[in-house]
Image 1: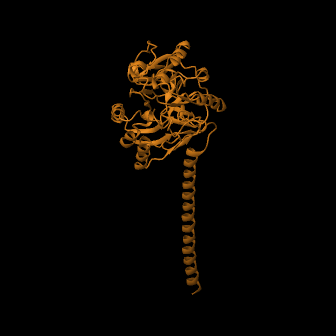
Image 2: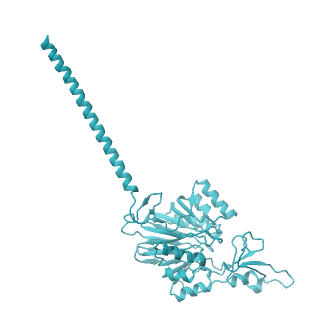
Image 3: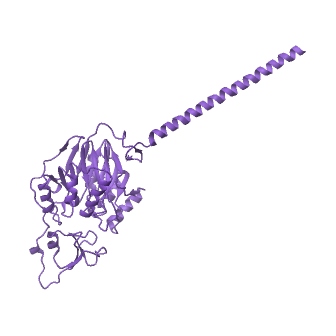
Length: 401
């Protein structure tokens, strides 16, 4: 009986031991698997989000990387297409299968822009940058927004109360697209290229000065875009670049404000030292763009000039070392002329003359009923529209005198 009981105890102890061993093995496997899972998750998280030294570089889709190791070692071909869309701005930038559109021209050229982008193989815009809300820069933006998938939208924070701007906001809302004004010093990637935001530096009274400005770089090749920024904002851009340790020296300068004398100031050109300038303006435009003063400044500095009003769409291709063009530089150095002549359009002495309000600092003239009349640097004049344009003044974009 005692022997039988001892055998039974051995059997029970064996079962209990086997049970305890199975629990131990199962627990060990579970802990090992859990630990491996956490380790891989942490490794993946760290590899994507651990900050590296240097400036944070933003990529399409919202991912971020450090300034070292985020940019490909070999530069892909960067293409910059300055579209001929009349008196306005529209520039397509392509690199490494990604695309960016800077401005969208005047109203009525949406289909032209759409067809051009489609012909270039663009199905998605990684960035849509609308430098400021003037109608010759956002005029056909609603069409672009409706026709293309868009990742990021950058806009000046200057708003306008007109149909063109409302159409733009409506198109963004319909596509559930949020827009932002990028901070000065922010860096974004486009293929192997990257661009750094230079402006707007602060809030401005004039929407031209509120333009988004950027420096596009691919290897050793650089392109500078300043929208319609004028002398005040250009000076701020130069100072901001110094503060952020950004070298403004550039190969290609997209001439500010369609070649107006109110832009391309001496401090900016001194800092940028461009080898070439591209002027986007319409043939025979009423503003007289490009102005003789701007062309003379370029010529004295030995800057090669390309013009959409004379040469159509201009394409520059940069491989990181050299830039090639689809056309030779313009050699006319011909300044624009305001359409019509003062003799042809002048009224008789019996007819009342129109009174305009001048802003002698921004060099703009307004209707007396304009909602954005200047409070300082203000003068009244009865000079004709053509006379004022010849003197270098430009019509207000809001009241359109």
